[in-house]
Picture 1: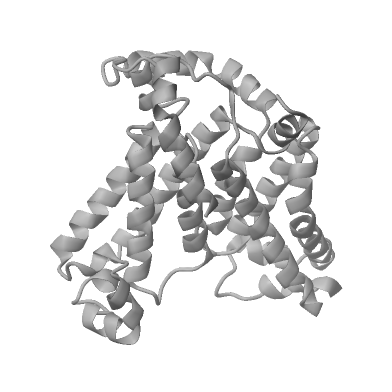
Picture 2: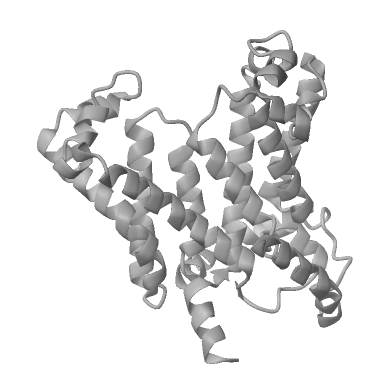
Length: 337
């Protein structure tokens, strides 16, 4: 093993248990997204709603030219309900890790499709979920804690994963924080410490907790600078602290707390929770070791409960890995492009 490869592994390898947690998180995000959209299925996604397909294609002609949305195939409530049910099934398959590669691909396709069906709704959460699902197609989300892993009948050869897709997944998180930090840094209100208090006085977005927090002027000023500093520093520290796993875990926990603060104080949809899920690949191995030790009984019950659902049919051996190698290299090449 070359020194360069060892350095890359230390910097960007992702624990397979972290990818399993990411898979579950993505599945839950997909299910939540589908559920919320389903509440307005007729109003937002059928020809009887606010944006019929003919009007959508007239205003956004490129949708018609490229045929990017499966949800344009039918304008009835039934047609949309079928697609929503398929979308939810993909999310559920991700949660349990059943046919994971196909499930994440289908979830990405239908997530992109439903977003394109009505371009007047949505926000940052949509883009983040779409990109996390995209990179998820190029990493082994089902290698651990999944029905797929049970089918293979044996553990993976390694405990960590390093690939183009894994690097892209980590960089995606860094890019989001860096873009947010740079955008805030260009605004005088953030540099002066007044931005958060101003945001928290907007009754349209603010929750009850946010209204209370907005009244704490000194605290809001400190939190404004703290958020700005965290978003500018996080993209670099998440990688720089890789050799220091406890500090890296502390950083991840701090960023997750910041995300939770956004979610509790502001009505901004699923974006804060999606960013917290996106941080899971940065959680170091020692934290997963402790989590496994703490949940040993629960995992044994899961193994017993799913024994009949995923009997081993394909041994996870060297021959099986060798057979998949060409396809893996092709996929990583596509991901690099």
